[in-house]
Image (tube, rainbow, N blue to C red; front, side, top):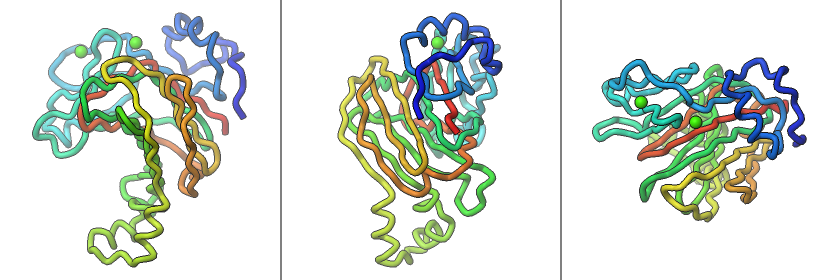
Amino acid sequence: MLMNWNVCLSSLVAISLAASCYAKKLDTEVSYGELIFFDDFERQESQEIKDEPGNEWTTSSDKTAGGRKQVDLVDGVMHMQTLEGANHAVSTRHAFEFEDGSIGMKFMLPNDGDSLKLNFADMTLKSVHAGHLFDAVVGLDYVSYEDKKTGVMDLEIRKARREKSLSKEQSAMLKTKKLRVVHSIEKGVWHELFVHVDRDTIWMEIDGTVLEQFSSEGFAHRRKGLLRLLVPGHAYVDDVRIWRRK
Ligand SMILES: [Ca+2]
Ligand SMILES: [Ca+2]
């Protein structure tokens, strides 16, 4: 259930001091439940050689880019980019926990072909590869959703795909696990994104436009425990917020 923003700031224990400045902006917005995480990235690294996003974010750069800096705090904004030669899109992660909830952020895609993937994971779930539950992706001319828990990251399905032994039924089933929606946004400008998950349904809102929703059983997984932001090109984010409804 979506509620109006009426939470007293003093009750929001997990929020940084900067939240008091931010509350003014939030007055005009709706709330999507209990605000359990907030980051405005108004801080600086102690150095500019390696990733140091702070506030308990971690990154994949040590493993995927030889420790080179791919995540940079610049003027109160988190810049993410995958460097030439990296073996995987840079992953910037933060723990949280909800069953139903919303994730909001401001984002900018500076170049043609850029995209930002919100990967929801549960690292305690052993039936899937690397905790993968599902993805919500925003590009410059589309958004997409994919249930990976009961799709490509299910260990049996993943094995069959790697061995090219998927049955016709499995291939047909996998096609039902994802949806791509045409939606264009301007590159190089800030946009407001919300990803909402309630029971087995996910949907996005971009700049106030509510986009087509998608339902699949994997979205209903009870413990969403880790957010991974995956950026194959470049993406900037600010004001990341996470609300829990259940
Ligand atoms: Ca910096
Ligand atoms: Ca900021």
